[in-house]
Amino acid sequence: MSAADERWMARAVELATAQMGRTWPNPAVACVIVRDDVVIAEAATADGGRPHAEEQAVPTAGDLARGATAYVTMEPCGARSSGRTSCSQFLLNAGVARVVVAAVDPSPFAAGRGVEKLRKAGLEVETGVLADRAAVLYEGYLHRVETGRPMVRLSNGGEGFDARLAASPKADLATELKRLGEAGYTRVWVEPGELADALAEQGLLTA
Image 1 (cartoon, rainbow, N blue to C red):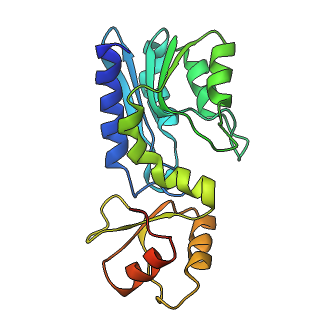
Image 2: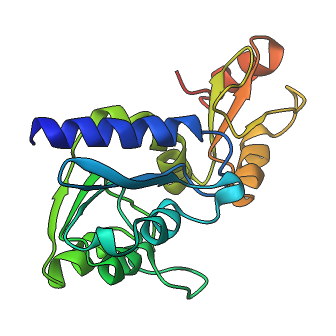
């Protein structure tokens, strides 16, 4: 991992972090396209989850993307549930020569398929660059993939969260969270109090 890779991935993480809480049901992802150590395009997942970062950055870069390096905070999808052009295909079509990825996506539409697709096409792909810094972007998303529930954390303002959890402490909280997970929520917040205590007692509150 070069100093340049760290610098440009840090920029991508910064862009994605600014979109946290605004992109559900999709995670906040950023794509920074660099050529000759100059940013030629950058974008993050739009409000509401569409369009994806790569979908926005590639058209902005235009022909300058050919031979460039794309820094992406999460693995570009290898397929789309809608059947539309995948993010990995957007990068291939753009002609980038190298793709640097922070986190590998465990979803059925990625799970290494995006990286494999890019490598099979002859692109150089690096993974795990600033993965520790990108982890906060996807901890809720990964939690939902693994449990079917959004991650729940204490907060006083909910900045960067998808929504506030509003439920009776006496409700079936696991079922309530499953419902939110099915709706696409990945990170929800709750204020300290009776509801938070009930969640903690049931092992549903993330430290």
